[in-house]
Length: 344
Ligand code: NAD
Ligand code: ZN
Image (cartoon, rainbow, N blue to C red):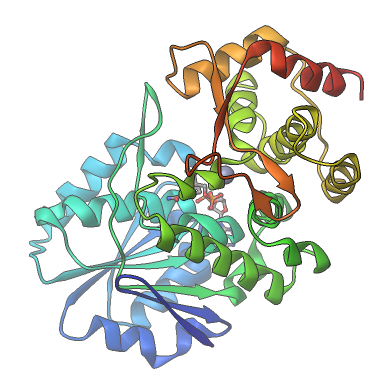
């Protein structure tokens, strides 16, 4: 087990067999503890864990649809009915949907109660659980309501990934490769996705980035690499395409754009393309240059007719652009990248 302090005040424990150690129990202390879990992993992990740490167990439905105002209200109402006061500790057990939602509830319930996250997907371990962003979705868009709220601790137990379906591994893997592109080229020397060292490097990368820029004034923007195009593709596919697949495609296309604009070498681009070979890298059938651009303008709520992109000038390095870490790109400048995709 490795312990890492995330500034200002979160203790991250990462390793194996963590849910059976007493460290978690110590955090519960004299607090009333409520474990809130994705119902899909209730029998796998939640019931046992609740018993071990003497917690009361609540479950939330599975999937992105659960990250709603309705689930949030139900959960908060349940806490009121149970008579939970400020001395209540909320523990989230599940993927990014659960950590985002429970994080949000913890940040607003009675103006904030203590929170512990136990991420159980690769994506939540390397990405969603780190950095304090909480969120729920609305009919107007994803993640439009949220707070920035630090958990007391994060327990990333890699043993919980044993039951993770293969397609969920790919979602996390896309974010790990992204980290390799924007921040840590050594990620590219590690082989295979089920590799503890690789996971740890991605976690350390995310921590370093959010510590430098907790509220996303500049540097933290680099985490959006691959997501400008990725989010637009997801929306065009009406969320049929998994996030990881869309991000993988987004990373390749934004790397191509970096090359086309003269920042990235062709050699680096070819290497990047090769590294995403475990992903299908196909645009949705209904994707045209025009609806892709429109979706990006919409996603970024940007009326200027230009979309801002994070760009890289070598593997492992995003360009600063005077501390903005992004630059506007016109529809015309994007044309070559779209044509390349259509022809490959
Ligand atoms: P998820 O929480 O929906 O989990 C994916 C699936 O895996 C679910 O069906 C779940 O039931 C199942 N599952 C979870 N753990 C399992 C386990 N150990 N064994 C078997 N099955 C398991 O999705 P996700 O990919 O973990 O997270 C996606 C969410 O994270 C999105 O809502 C996204 O917006 C959010 N996110 C947040 C941040 C942030 O900074 N807050 C960053 C990235 C993503
Ligand atoms: Zn992502």
